[in-house]
Amino acid sequence: MPGGDDLHWLLRAPLGFFLPAGLVGRLAGFGMAQAALWAWAGIGFGLALALLASLARAAAPARPGRAFAVMAGVFALFHGLDILPNAWLDWQAGIGALGSWGRGGEWWSRMFQYTGHVTGLLWAPNHALPAWLVTLLLLRHWQAPGYARGVALPLAACAFWSPVGAAGTALLALAALLRQAPGLQAFRRAALAPGNLLAAGFAVPICLYLVAGAEAVPHGALLSAHPAAQALGTWALFLAVEVLCWAVAAAALVRGWLFGAAVAMLCLLPAYVFGPGNEMTSRGGLAPLTVLAVVVATALLVPALGRAQRLGRAGLLACAVLALVGSAMEGSLLVTKSPWPASRECSVPEAARQSVFRGTTDWSHYLAPWPEPLLKGWMRRPVLRPVPPPGGEPNCWPNGGV
Image (cartoon, rainbow, N blue to C red):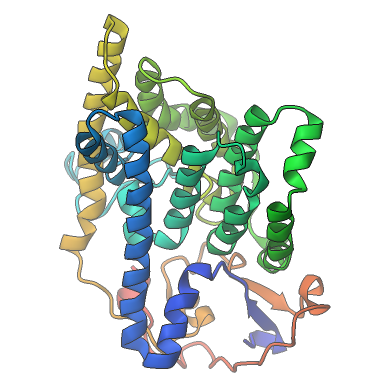
């Protein structure tokens, strides 16, 4: 796509989620593409529910129906306690404690966010579904003898859907491998298994494509991007509201290697900022949040025998009520705002120019200058598509993207 001064841009984005619907649209038209995208997302969520049913049976084999209801309910509505800081901030702003109704409120910290599952499914299924599915597979199978010999296959597929989400899942998989196959020799045997080598061959061209020009994406240490006192204070409050409230209560009832690894990841991810929307937390946190959600559901299913366990159970139930309110706040956008009509004519640069983010990002996370040295040697020369000058295309977003 040509830009100003004869500059050309290559769309460089994780397109895996959209390709099946794109193929349907190519063959049957735009309306069928939209229907296919709905069906594709529904299939993904259905697979996630099937994996949750398996995990629920393992957690409470005596009552599998009740266990699945608890596991699926907790997972679908899992959310941080955003309602608490949002209520305070909105009260201070004079718009009432429930001012986030119809607006959502996961960005209350302004520095990072952990995506609740309602938000992930409604607004970013292309990121949420692959992270959920691969992580749930990990939870179900990581202790099986043959899992390490094929662990890279789902990770490679996940990367083309959500590269930062796949990175978070890969860290959890690495933690599982270190536990299952300690020692350099065992780790090397697992890494060189045929399934993993096949996945590496599949992943190399995809990863080269996804990282082309990525050095232009804003990134860096949190403490270099924000004043230290402000960043550390927000970080501590963020963890208390989003992670530790769940983890401390659940630890009274459930312990586990991947549980500890997930909590450690969630505590450390805010230290690094990547992308204009800080995808290091919003996407990289999807996998460890999946583990935390399953652990919380499991903690609600196991018997609470001692005083500490009963207190943990009470804490989880209190968090669940607040999280339910937060999920309702995120879902409220569906009933308070009319859906935007699909834009069929706008190019990516024009849609970016018209959006609410036009003054805060250069869209380098989706566009790379062409020719790109990393890709030029093996990628077929793209067919150029002329892009009209600014203002030459129809309105892409109602109200300018607000």
